Length: 445
Image (cartoon, rainbow, N blue to C red; front, top):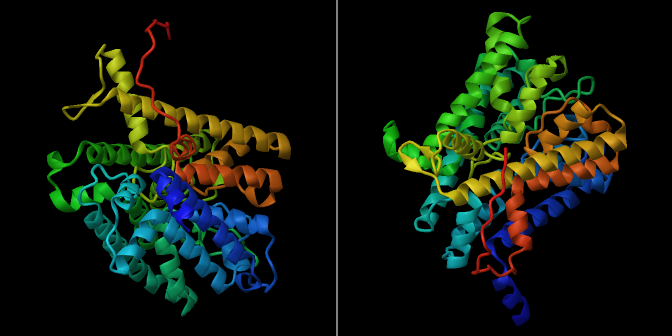
């Protein structure tokens, strides 16, 4: 017992986050294999249960079985629980349990919380956690209540469950839906493509969940006084707005011209919002042009913002790389933004994250393409959807073989936990070198 405690104390915050996600994924998979989880009352193969559990915990939304028709009410409840845990983060949920028991969080637990939610400071981490939990409950409950009359009108009493399920799934940027029918599986939200209320509520839930908990705090504290926001919050809000409206304009002009004006506006906005990790779709993605699907891949890789329910390489990563390029063009030593200078270490981190996501996406797509003999573009779409924890699909995921599903499973996990978290967890024992080697110039570009 003493040895176990000693080992537990040696775990870094990155190792705790990594192992926590793995533990929840495996536990969820084991529960989903049980007959009570399937509507047929039969055991579910472990590889399918593992894929579904990973997709739920990593708030992705890619599925091999239609959530509405394959899983029982119990199975759907398990999936929703996994989505909530994955959306808020395993560490956040564990800290919540500790606080509910009346115990105080230790310094190491607070440090782990800081890394888990990307908080700028260790001080006030407990207050921030309570703020996140209260905000989550209020927002998800409000979303469910607003959508409830529509779903009750369409599905009767079942509409209550559907309201809560889709509210949580949208806020956590998960993309799981229970709209499927025996004759129309994997329907997502296509039946509500012209319904303004459902579209707007889901978009707001996705955006609020995807901008990050620290940004929430800034907005609540400083209201509309934008100048008082942290630099990170300013960058997140500006980049998020750009990544919503510019792609929406492109989709409006290029992809959905055949639709009536109202549905065209809603469809363009919804697809632009959901693509950066939410995973719902209201229109047929296979009918989009090659350019539109390419834009989808870019948006899926970018994802949401740090410390949010969303995945991807993050809006701040792309912003830092663009600002660094601008500073290079202007021959400035460091990137600058909103009257502040960005440290070189942040640029190095952003470059590493960008390279990791691009590499993992292309390697994953190449493996799937080779194994399944499918077009590379379709494989790249599914791979980007997995690593960006989005859940959008061109329809090939349910038909993939075991190897390809395992590739997507690994990509989903790395996309949610974060590639750097995995590296830091694996290399935590390595010592930091204090000495520096001589400098020599290399020509680039």
